[in-house]
Length: 297
Image (cartoon, rainbow, N blue to C red; front, side, top):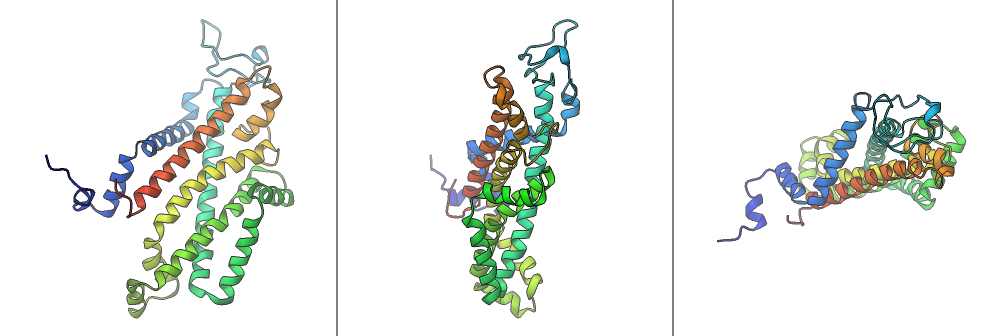
């Protein structure tokens, strides 16, 4: 039986179908995608899934280990914390904060980075130099340290923490966009569009941006995991979400002294962060391979 080459498989596929075919062939990426979709679905449907209010304090069940419901006794799937709050409910509601903030941070950094990077790539000269030097300074400082400095200036809150992480992730999108714009500006299709009258933002959005979207999509997926980690780190340090908000980082912070007495209160939020970040990174790697025309399925 004749073996079909990848070029023959992709011959009748559109570019989007080809990307989906490559991504679907990557088992790790598809598993990661399923995990992320499951987490998002659970976060959205949290009020319908949980049986306890995440803020309700049941003083007769402090630090209860995981156990099912038995008769008239309410069950706690993942146990309770030191205030008698259901950990399963707090983890699901915490997923709302962590996942939503991750998406919001990446979206803000992506849009801002694309705008600034396109200015640097199109204008060139002094404008490009100033933007690049500013990005280099930001990259020279450890990300979590820069985020801590920004939150210390603005004040400890979940919104300020999200803004700080957005600024920290900004240089990556700026540099990618600037390099891609410079590379595309010399190509024939861009020159033809310029001769047709396109210039400025119209040239960028209609001609250049669709052709540089692949690396930006990959960077956005990988930055999602960084955003969740940084938000959790700031929450752990007390600079992000403030109690009683059930954000994963703050859950770790409030339970770190209970690791010997009630280890489930610490390990479960940590596992939630680990699984989400791992799935995001695996999906990002799969997208990078699927969007690279040099990589065959």
